[in-house]
Length: 569
Image 1 (cartoon, rainbow, N blue to C red):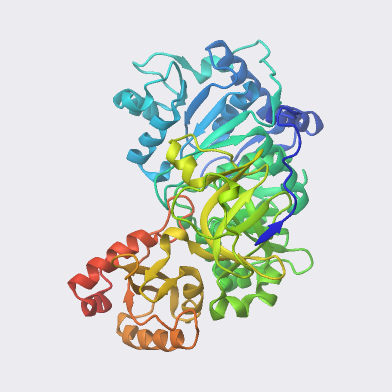
Image 2 (image 1 turned 60 degrees about the vertical axis):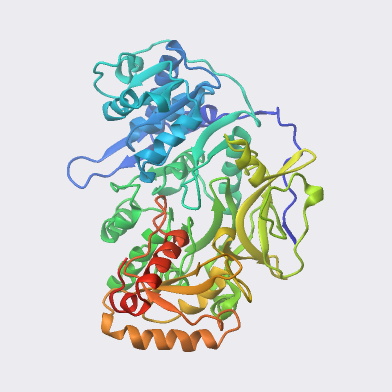
């Protein structure tokens, strides 16, 4: 099954592009006094950085970095807290053509060190606490030759950001091409080992274009930022970024009243958020009746979002111009597909509720998407691919200029996730889905999460969307217990806040009756109640089916009845 627009990969990959630094310089020249970054403070003074200030500061850093040996292609670890200084540092590196290495701190120190070891960076920029980690764990940073400290330097030597910012010479301005490496970021590791994703300047240029054409971003927008990567994207379109004072590793803990206040106070026009942030915000706005009249666009991503959250946000957005988009993507390809809330709620809701899966929309312009027969091992080239039939569930593969062509390593990761076809590379998402007659993609879950029962496979998301319709259920997760091919399907259930444990027998009975009414779920007979599902570290919303499967196996061994009574983790 094929869908999507023709891939924009026919241009010469050595074509010279407008670099991120040149885009920033152009915005600084066009509207230098306009705020680029706004950091509202819960207490104290709000900090604002204009486009002119950001351009000048990143120029000084670029010149200083060049003097200490950072140049085009230098892989550079950046370990700094979110703030204007971090943004200026990364822009300074990009102006040189250096390659920032970004690792999500939410994944924990052990995984972070594994990522840094794989990155084989040559330069390190970090705050004193980060420098201490580097000194104490030299095995993870064996290739570092240049050290820059953001803050007070102790015993480790090297330069300081403050010293480099005093540089008065003009920085180099290397040309960049589509194939040139832009950045190395790492997958969250929520579905396996974290992998280094190589992003190119061509991919960024295409993402900037898509942001303007698909989401209609302009320099007049004011964007509320809950993801650092989206902050850079918005800045490159000339938009102002309002950065809330939240823990970016735990966006689910953000206070919805504070987010709502920022939207009104700064006349925010657009925001991206994971379901973990948007759900409490939607509830808050719905319950209080607060208006967010300036907000014209809300984009949800990172994990499937409940239809009731979409419906709530749709109700509170301005009816004349407010829009909500639900997106589907991955670290290796952002975005892949998108659907507007109106189409999601008005046209496809009944199909999802009856076991059709989650509709994530049509591929965005420039992304070519295919559904192929799932295979457990590597697929060496496109000639070995077996296309899925119409409406058949298979693995989603994508190609296009925003799709990463390779991982940093190891070789097995590339062999298992990439398929060569002449000059093109297809990325295997590891996700399962199908394409309907209107070209819309329906997500069915991760390939690794399929329950392989004796009487055939069970796909998680089509089952979960049926059971999630129960009014007292927050979310469900289908997992398999036992040997693949003979797995027992088990439904883990997380109830809504305030539902007493005494109601579990009734709810279990109602879930079983609900399951029997739909073909996708009629084989489900076992239900376990869990107090709070484990989720991914990046968006705090993607359910960790693997951990739940292990919990279900332990719980069943210890007594299913006890688990149903206590919900013990």
